[in-house]
Image 1 (cartoon, rainbow, N blue to C red):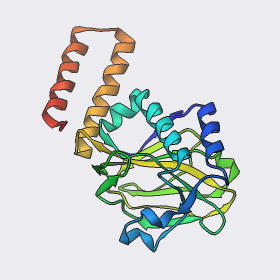
Image 2: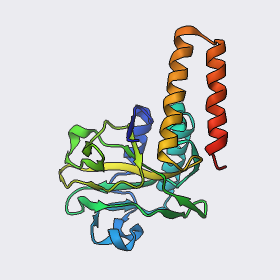
Image 3: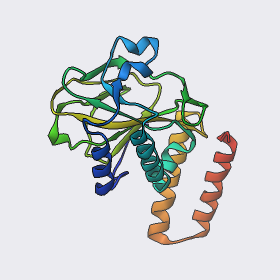
Image 4: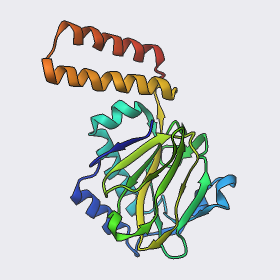
Length: 228
């Protein structure tokens, strides 16, 4: 399920993130965190995970995710890999086609996280740079994604994807992975659709015996499929 979530970060939070991701930030070669498959295709800069700016920004993003009910409904997170931050500009401007590693080690929590869901949170105004589209391959063909600052895209970690070369300006983003309580992409989609339709029914009709019964169905399915 490829999904666009709007306003994960508020404008003042985006401004704070940008201020911490300027030229003075602790930028390192992005290949330092890439697996063997990706090293030859990754050409960007990444914020050093042990820097003060990284720790501040990680908590900013975690807090934003905790307050967003749509993110929880779509991802059903069990673990969230510590958010990372990258910059595409100048000669370090692209990331070729690759698939994210299936299981990744989170340095901040010392946990292994299965990458069920991949997430990119855009931090630059799309008008401030050319290129830089996130291109995700799915059953409908290539999806080209370039979102407003503060918006997030989530997509299955199984998908081949790339970042197109940035030919003007700089593309700043946060990226991370989610290990979901519900491992199956199909099951997560069914639960999300049911949750969204229940929400719409309650808004239209209030709480009814039917919405109560369907809520029970949702939780029984979640109980059947979830791993906590």
